[in-house]
Amino acid sequence: MADVIVERLGALVRLRLNRPEALNALTHDMVHDLNAALDRVEADPSVAAVLLSGEGERGLCAGGDIRSLYEAPREADGASMAFWRDEYRLDARIARLPVPFIAYMDGLVMGGGIGISAHARYRLATERSKIALPECGIGFVPDVGATWLLPRAPGELGTWMGLTGRSLGAADAIHLGFADAYMPSDRFGDLIAGLAALPPGAGHAAVSATLGAVTLPAEVPPLAAHRALIDRCFGFDRIEDILATLAAEPGEFAAKTLADIRAKSPTALKLALRLARLGRLAPALEAALELEYAACRALVRGPDFYEGIRAQIIDKDRRPAWRPATVEEVSDHAVFDALQVTAARVFPATPL
Image 1 (tube, rainbow, N blue to C red):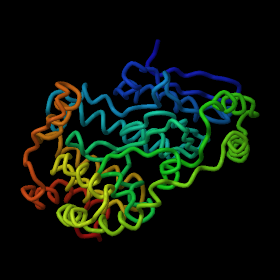
Image 2 (image 1 turned 90 degrees about the vertical axis):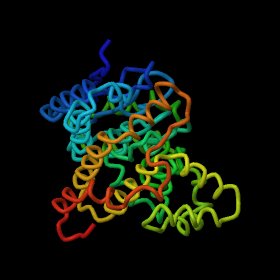
Image 3 (image 1 turned 45 degrees about the vertical axis):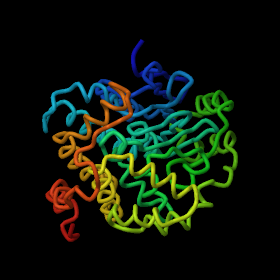
Image 4 (image 1 turned 180 degrees about the horizontal axis):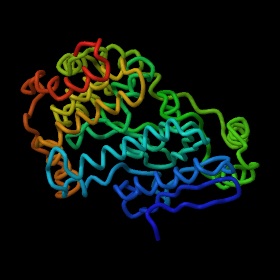
């Protein structure tokens, strides 16, 4: 069967990612298929809603197909850059789609999976949701518009999420702005039936009412208990200062957070933090995506992206040899140079 199943049920169009054996990881062909489906949706005024979900029991989408990116030619303008270009355009399109778009963020939703769901108009998390941006752990940076979302989370919670790579459950995802509502997974059938029963071209009010019938209030977000510590430790513009402040904090949460960050690529950490800070100033999602694309061009020419994938996916030894090995060895100039031209074009009045 196709890797993207497009199904029409009444006034509902279902988009079903269909690579469950690969956790529905996105390929370039899948990006094209989703775009083609949205072309048809926008041309059909009878469509009341679009519902995105993932096949299988493990989640919506574990991200981009990074094994294929690892195997692609390592060129600044090669297949990897073409994939990111088209993926980012799809993410922006979903955010601007006039037809109500609902993302069912059940199970694993990571990296590229966030790109096609967290920018949707309606985002439903479940008791099984594990929403994460683990890119710094493979020598990459949170992308797919994450640097638009992360700075808009309360306080420094977004900075914490992007640098640690930790996953969020439903309550925390809603609190940080990556989801809108909690829906138990056993109500998924009711959701489909309700959306399919909508009249043609019903509109947002009817969709909202349908979602209101299947969602429940979220629990208290666990991260709220650590908000003061996170704000205190992550309010710096230098990774070195964040690490030093965490090291001085007592308690298990700070120690675990420090260990999580130290395991990541130093180059990716510095670039990710800079992107997050610039993302605060971005006038729109597209501006953040432009900066992320510039970061991709820099990372695809360096060693850490491929070393991270090797350690996590290819050899699975979980022992990446980052180059440089420490944040102190990563030149700030190298980070700024990777973004300088794009940042000047996206918002010329803002200095790097």
